[in-house]
Length: 272
Image (cartoon, rainbow, N blue to C red; front, side):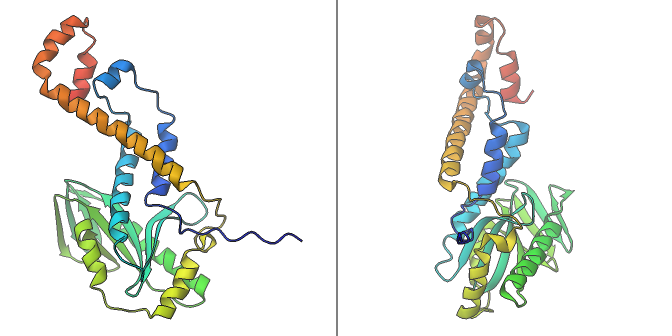
């Protein structure tokens, strides 16, 4: 009789792993840039992949912050949940309780919160609803795994907003910036003793606690390596665009010299 395989665990997953995997899969379908596009710094990202890329950067940033919590905390990243491809950005288990974190990269945009409403640049979002749903789902799944009620707090972390205005705090979800996150967590009162933390953490790290049919864990190292390579291409393209924008007075001459091939490139660089 063959022994059952050891249950898949989540401790080796890295920040933004699910987002990076999806981004790289989509990026692999994109046509390669031409030589001229590379010379003039056209981004390797498409409209579709750009949002995934921005989301990955946000989760990576929050992951680095959470690494400073210390050994009393279990920190999980990109936790697959349900039966499909959904995931929870970060799950925390520590003396201050259990938290699900939904990371939102709204760099440079104003964010306004009042009650059940969170608006980004004047537009309503579902961030609060989604974060509350994640927390309730985590509470149910962890409670079933440990055999007793587990309270879970949903958190929305807003990255580098132009301004975060909270007119009235949401009922079920907390909203903080990435700069506030670590202090906010460390200032919270202890609600779990070491035994409770250990018991919940032991359940939380098991993939089957969260997902009905967890697959084999992906190669986190390879995903990080491939994302780093893409990130380098994006940075190089950005630097080249900046260099060409600074040199736009010479574009007229170059357009004549290249037989008018620069027209489309100039439109990309200037947004015209």
